[in-house]
Length: 552
Image 1 (tube, rainbow, N blue to C red):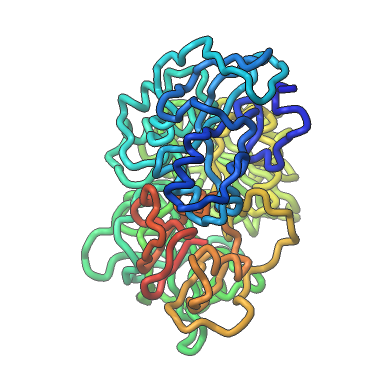
Image 2 (image 1 turned 180 degrees about the vertical axis):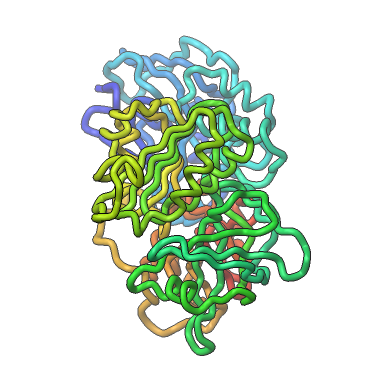
């Protein structure tokens, strides 16, 4: 019995990557089995080994189209998308590169949506009742997303197919928008939407500390300028730079990411750093770095940037999380933007409320601005309705009470608790996923599909004998470890160090593992189906070629 979400008695284990209305039934072809038996020189491949529900005679990926409608027995089905390849097929086939091979050979298989529930059995005839509206085959649609070359006319054609699943529709829309809005040709925003524009230079560049300012009891700003007279590439509002710090000659090198907090596009970069009680880098910047010192700095990076458009924008922050959204506010104020702009910020008290006057000046330049400041523990000298608007913390009920528009672009940055509370709350309120933009200080959330949850561990050096190869530095996690021959990829090394990682295919297809390569170079084995964006790396299939720094 075929039900709306699956075949009775055969549910999906990993609902993040499989299942749902548009992926209720997976189909694979007998002809493809014959192909893999010949290509892999294997006689031990049995039906069902690719995880399919229906093993079929016919229905080639080069013939079946998105939107085709079929009747089998008393059930009616509609073709919605190609298979999304993941690492499990490699395990089942005992062939680690199987996910990449399915794409390279144009034999992914496809999913069906159940239009009419009914009974099916082996041996039944498959009757096509309708043809897909645009005549785009499974093989063509699969290649359009995963392989290099994404012609705009073919993307537009795919986006006209109403039966195409929402996930694939979003990926093709992202690809088309990139083509229409920028000249960037590297990378695949349909697979790695977090990939920002390529950095202006690779590795580190020496910059001089031009100015230093105490912003609050714990926040210090540095203004950095070029040492060689060559102008700095303007960072986009919201982007960050990475500093390589040497507190003492014999101490380990520190790598730290800091958002640009000043107006983008100027001749200098300003960063603002909070000193935490146990923060070595923050203490060094506050007490050790002096005007005139030379620091090693990367070009601006990151995809957390101010979104173009004319609609409302809500800048949400807490603590030092104000820095990237402050750069966005500066950018809006610089052009006296007519957009409706909301500045909502949470601080501990007035002593820990940097940039207060700066924010007021920016908001005054905006004709449609709103401001709301909260102090979680206001001090005796903090003036209600002057220094802050209310005690408490930023929350969804507050946004609703203030009348924040739900169709705005929401840009969030702050401590982990702030982010983990607000982001799902906004989604539950009905804010579209493509309107929620965030930056997280420190390591990002992991994605390890189908792996049982385990207690989080602090990143650490791997157990066993130390490697003797190039130094691999995970910048956000603060781990520097020599490469060892035991690892087949940078991903495996990161996992051995409990560095949070994101992956799905582990063979260079899905781009979930795409990460900024801050410095150094890598080699690929296997080579990815489509290379990552310029300045990035796919950690699942790469090894270091010399010392490298990765934004993990």
